[in-house]
Length: 306
Image 1 (cartoon, helix red, strand yellow):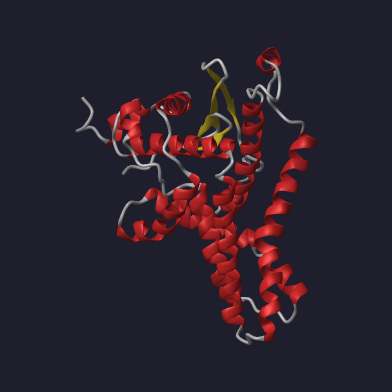
Image 2 (cartoon, helix red, strand yellow):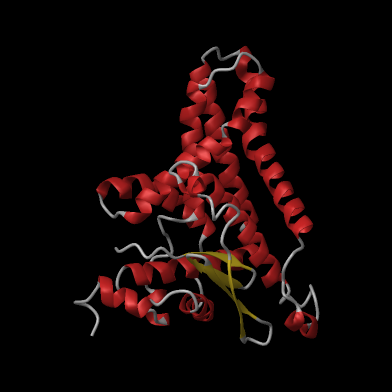
């Protein structure tokens, strides 16, 4: 396996692929054609060197992923017949205003923090009457947090739109795995590649859950309000550590990184599904507009490229 540096995200009936500052969104439209948008995204603090320091860069990378992800989702939503007419979506840029983007992002973060960080802390706090060990309480809190996350991703997979999005998610991973394992980017090669990938956002979320257990075991607070506050304030720290671990495991392929990556890849069984060939075609279209996979194979797998 050779690290390519490209990443992506499933959107509604499509795929976003990003390489450096450049990204492309490919969407399968109702008339079965592929609509493509190419653009650049530099990041909220792209000009600041300190924002690229280890353990700090992960925080801003997470924020950038949310911003770009919402932007691409809104673009792909225009091609849903229920959202707008065909003429309207051809002329629309698919972008949100700065205020709309900020409100959407803040709302998403508040809901996620409340559901997956605060709620488990409050629930487990009721067990203090029967459990005196703060270490055990922190462990139970982490287990509950992980269980809620798994229940959430499994539950929404029953929705038809989400199930198809999970299939596109699988096609995204398959494309990257195909390239990083030295195979030409064809539909046939992509279809036989793995739908799990070590650099997936699902793996990042698992690392957040796992690392939070360890940190919350060390951080002891005397009462519930301070405990909730500590959980919220430690989120950037947890995100920064999780990003570095994910980055490390994604760049190197050995027994150690495989062991670390395995739990997150198991969970990807819930968030990725096997795609159809037409979904893979969409993913390939997005990849080819941001990444020269032929040059990558020639440089990294010279013996396998004719």
